[in-house]
Amino acid sequence: MKVAVIRFPGANCDQDAFYAIKDDLALQVEYVWHEATSLDGFEAVFLPGGFSYGDYLRCGAMASRAPIMNEVHRFADEGRPVIGACNGFQVLTEAGLLPGALMLNAAQKFICKDIYLKPVNRTSIWTRGIDRTLRLPIAHGEGRYVLDQDGLARLQDNDQIAFRYVSPQGELEEKWNVNGSVGAIAGVLNKKGNVLGLMPHPERASRQLLGNDDGLQILNALKLVSARL
Amino acid sequence: MATVRVYVTLKPSLLDSAGRTVAGALQKLGYSELNEARIGKLIELQVEPYEEARVKEMCDKLLANPVIEDYRFEVAGA
Image (cartoon, rainbow over all chains, first blue to last red; front, top):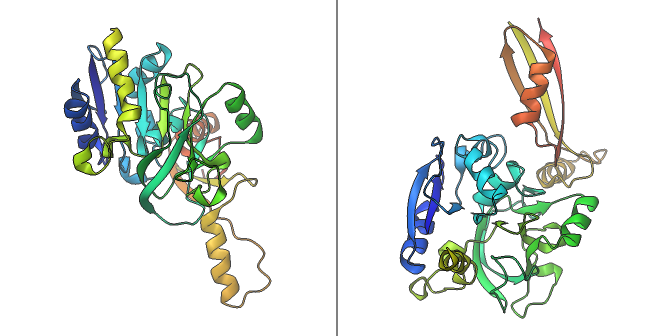
């Protein structure tokens, strides 16, 4: 199994993702430039965080129209694992691969700290192995998830809510909803459950040397899929 | 050459946290008549020739995100 880490100009978590996949998951991984047009030979995609195209116009807007995104759409349709963290999540919503949008944090501030996450969906490849509250870092200015009431109802009916921001004890409380997201939503899935977007950074918490390996609870999905190939 | 002005605005139902901050600052400056400020974008396009359908396509494909934004445009000089 080989994972593609897509590189957009302005991405800055591409190396974190690369080494988490290579060293902590012990999987094959390669960078793929955003102007490439083929993902032949790859089985999964990681869209890293950062500030693609300087966040001009809207976060992720230009990246979501890059040539490589046709292949990311194909992967999503074919049910292959696709994950976007932070800016990668913004790219996935802008591409229409995930519902909703990400807007300026309610407190108008860039927030860089550890938060707590609880899985909601328990059946997708990305969430089914998680049996506890996770602590993960966030670092974003525009992570407030928004979606209209009808969209939110559909998200709930289809079990597409991947994660919510919670207290360290796993309780849903507004004060732990760090950026003011609707429903305290931190991550969402597509209908099939193979595409995950989330604002927290699992790739920055993938080994004890970094002080935290909770990110592996999510990234291990790539390993499980790899074992089945 | 036609100048097309595209105005992109946040949907009225959405919280504009930057606009709210600006409104707060204006109120602190003494403009008590101010109820709300909302921030949008103005994008000026130079096109030749101008075709309304093509500009609409540009807005739908990239300039505005229909999940959170509305847009309108006007031709300044054809």
